[in-house]
Image: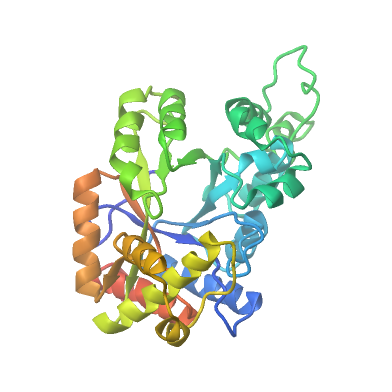
Length: 357
């Protein structure tokens, strides 16, 4: 589960994929890009590749992480694959246990199950997903849902429990059936968060923790401190292990990096103002008349995006790893073009002398 540092990188490097869809591109194009990035980053020594769950966003085609991960498993052989994350309140725990048990059977020993408690969308879409408008109830029940999911993954409901005779398949029950042989692997659980709730819960349960620095940078260090202070060793982990998601984009030219991240920021402006769409081109962003409030948002947003030449991005990632003490950096490179995203991961790999060049 713990990654190994490659080349001159300060910590293991990994990938977070939103399967972004640019204007003029299709979801098929985006998914083909994801395969290309997964194959490239596996060859270059990145440690894991996670897909995030989002809904009702035209520019993000990652509504079904388990389906995408199955596709990526068919095209890779070493890199760890996982969810960054599955939003637990959107799903029945048994369904998640079955999906990730199936993924584990497809890619033994390299599947991560990262879980979040946010909906990954707006309230109306969350209500449609959950078939209820009591959305706070799902978030408040997260520890109980997590416990139930863990029971299904381990197949260890106690006697007398109403789910005692229900089994997630593929799963441990197959080892206890006549002639059964079961894989020794079980997807490790990760908790994801952008505040203190999941940080504390991950620490108390002795689970690895992933923090969304890429959109909640002001909370990163407090959350990591809380996680480490709360940590209790467990069967899963003997010491704290925290990765942070970081938005980073490297290009061959510094000015081109600015153009690309400005277009991605325009996409966020539209999302935050109730106008979600496809990721615009840099040309569209250059022609867009930003209001004063929108310009302030863009400046604030891009101040947390490490971008520029490969050397500039390497310096930014080094500094972030040092400031936060993160055990792993999970890079998400958002841009209109899949080619730009691929090139960014290659440039970062080259900057750190990762293997496979």
